Length: 116
Image (cartoon, rainbow, N blue to C red; front, side, top):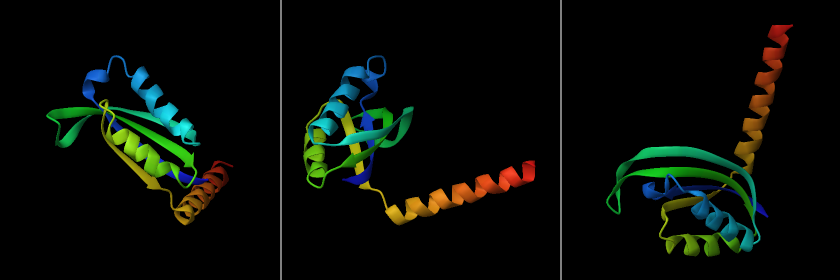
C-alpha cells in the first residue's frame, strides 16, 4: 500500500449537513481497500474561479493508504458524484516526507536545548 494525499472540494450547499457526503467518500476509500490515516476539515473557502457556477466550496483533506488499483477506482467514482465539485489524489513523495520528519525532529531538539 502506498501513501496518498486526497483533497476533496464539496458543494457549498452541503455546509449544514456534510456528514452523508463525507461518509460516501470514506466508504469509497474503504471499499477500494484503503485506509484513512488522517482527516482534516479545511472549511468553506472562496474558489479561485467558479466551478459549476459556484464561487465557494467546502474543502476536506485526507491522508490515505491505498493499494495500487484503488486510485483509478476512486477517481472514477468521485467524477460522477454530484456532491463533489473537484478532487485531487496525489502520491506522497517518501523522500520528501522523511526529510520533513528529520527537519521537524531537529527543530524540536533545538527548542528543547534552548529551553534547558
